[in-house]
Image (cartoon, rainbow over all chains, first blue to last red; front, side):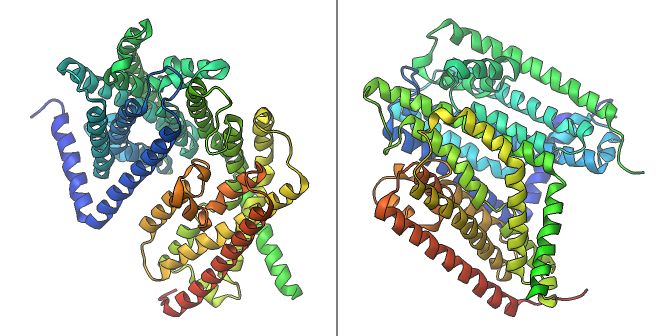
Length: 278
Length: 276
């Protein structure tokens, strides 16, 4: 008998069960996938439109059309993984706190955060993920450039860091339902905050831009999540300033701190959980 | 006649009270509505700064300067505050699916009229609660506007907003009525939401769309939900063109009013309700 649960096997079971559930309602799965791809394409259309009018996002930033597509591809990869693995679970977690069904998760012989974070996986997010990969290949072919092996490994590593930062923020937002009772507005905040990470950090300039850029880098490090891996891919940005060397190091620290902080908030929230009714 | 007016007044009053229960959530929600615009401001600032580098003589995109562009986004929040009908179509479809729609069939209350009053109440409360955050944001962003437009433009702007509300209502109600024919309309609603987000001008001024695509989109009803009122306020549409555009908006509103009525009548004929 194992002294501790086999987390990997449980995760694979979650993946399989979610896939079985999705395949039971195949038409629904197909519609979900197609609509999320449609959303991606519409957004891409908007940026194509923007780049009809400008050669670059910000004078001298290096974010030309295809460099930005690499950024967009990175956003798609990070977002689709976070949404696919965690979003529905975070929403469900808030709901479990409100309705008291979290009791069932607490009594299971496995880490509660693991269980509530990964219980239901959204396979339809594979659509935007593949769109991200496709867009990346397209951008590289237009730039006539391919990343080297170390660059690729680092990119994948920083993608994981990005996912971890987004996840930490999301779980903190969801866990606050314990204290607030109502979760909607706070989880909405997650969308609004990560909205700031949709564009390269150089976009935030000036009297108002700089404080925002610093806050979303050092206080709530969402800007790091996509910017650091995306910068790794884009050649013109490779290392141009001390900041380019500092950011990747900071990203690792930010990831660790985010994960530890979110784990702490999560545990605190469980201590304050009082179930609902009898 | 008087009895009917009393009924409508009661419905409106109850809906008003119902909406006021969550006024705190409302106010916070309104302020958060402006957050995505902050990122849009920075995006356009970056776009225009790159354009200034290549064409320093006051760049514009499809006739919009940087200030125009930001003013446009702020104004679309006003248009959307009139035209958006959260949960209307899905609510009607849900009522049809779970049988709640029966109450409109057996009680002397008209579904479209009742829902319209609920929405009027919702909007009235919304404007009441949202006025302060809106005023604050517009005051802070006053530098992006070049003063108030003239009286004619103002009248056209108000007319376009009122029609945007009615058009939004009847258009969504018509989509909700599709629930009489198809039990599950969520995916259809998503498609509508997607098209509406991009083709209503919520995401960018429709003048940016090139060629035939732009012309077609500017004949569609969706543009009246966000783009048109904002463009009118900014003086992008004026003179005879404004008259024609308002007439077209009116025509689309009447079209969807009739469509919703016809869909309801035909739908009720198809409808079968069982049990309590």
